[in-house]
Amino acid sequence: MENKEENLVKKTCRELGITQKELAKRVGVSNTTISDWNNYRTPIPKWAENSMQMLIELKEFQAIKKGFQNLVDSDMQIRISPIQPS
Image (cartoon, rainbow, N blue to C red; front, side, top):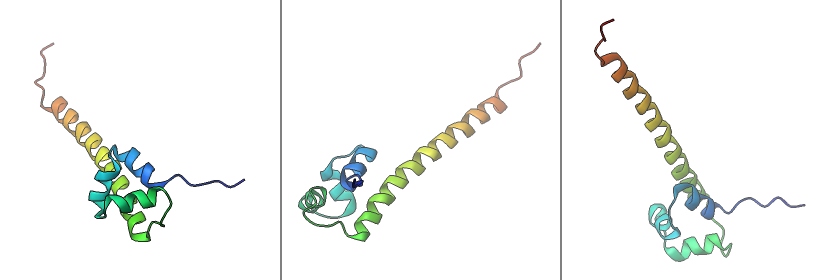
């Protein structure tokens, strides 16, 4: 049984929460090109695969960065909080 890989265009749009039109703009291609890739009319070039993967990784990195920043901010609030008398 063939294990077909998930459509990269759909995966990228889903993970980024964007439309195909927005993806076309971010990758720097026309809406028609994205549609052709999505419908397997033309193969996705390696540079475009890399670009979409990097967009996904950037979003993941930004989420990690935000979580880390929240952790640092909460730690700073704890350290700055005045000591309550006993």
